[in-house]
Length: 183
Image (cartoon, rainbow, N blue to C red; front, side, top):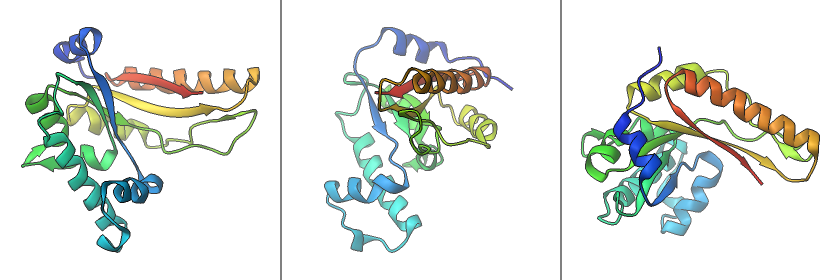
């Protein structure tokens, strides 16, 4: 069942200033992100511990006085971050109520192999369930990434069609999609 769009968040996105912070690293990029932050691979021994470390890093960033509506318009969260809490408050609620930052969710499951000069999004068979959870958790919108690598008209048409097809599914759930075919 679709939710009503949060009008206050909608107005913030439509008229506010700032940038959208990407806090949505998933599996592959997480060790590098942690390393750049000063957390070496010997600080964790499996994926669960690694994601625990990235959650601590994200919580420190979000709790910084500079992470506020004065500079940041929205924040894109990884699914595990959406399901976590900061000081007992769910992360999406914390972002909006304590920081004035609109919460978004990364919904794509990574990129398929390159074909026709583009990388499409991998299939998302559980997208409806994820969108339902996102609505329950107070997420405003979503982000999904595909990549255009060459000026191949057929590939570009295919990427754009996929982005808008999934975007319509997201909008039908009551969320605002960020359409992001990267070039």
